[in-house]
Length: 293
Image (cartoon, rainbow, N blue to C red):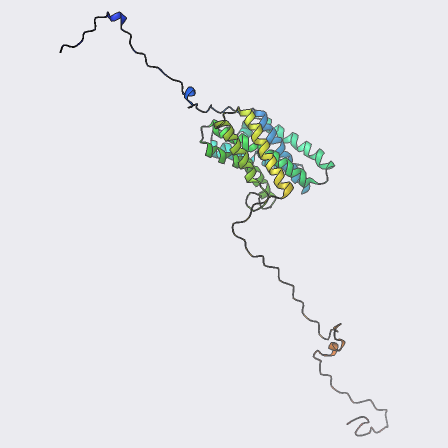
């Protein structure tokens, strides 16, 4: 059987063109690239964290140098760990932008003004620390995602960025850091904010600023509720509490006892030798003396 011959002219033959279907039309939308948050968000976190550190310095009676140093470490410690240890994109932001130092100075002045009018510093420090914790968690995740880190690594960097300054502050003032001991939710609040931000940006494709606001609000509310209702973590192993030993008091010899008055004579006595009664000169003493058995 002879093969069929195509008698059509070559100009009329249509060459098939490959059809490209965008991935977005079949439910395969790729997550958008993260957008760097405005610098004002990190500056806000710096001011709030610096105020909490300055209030701690006021409560401990530090001078001007100590107040600024503690506020500076509290505000920038987590950022220095984030930029210098994990991201390694050059010097930390606090050394490249003078606005961070100015923000710490403004926070110190504000803390002195507020601290002189507020008697209970502990509650104000806790609230300011909650705000700084939530803001730094979001900023840390955002910067880590901009450096092309995986979401899990970015969440870890965000938690370290949020808790690093507070840990340094507690170590300097010789207090056990809140991060290491069972107590009210601290690192857990930062972790919640970091997870919320990464999920809203990567999964729900929300804009960076909106996702940051929602994540900061969630972390702040969780931290405040933990303080208000005393939500605490529990230790993995409960160690028995040993009561302190009672001080031993040595008994006083011949001390009277209120329950038994006769106990005053129950103690050991020293042997007192008997002394013969004195006799007037020229008088012969009786032998045996009167009263002798």
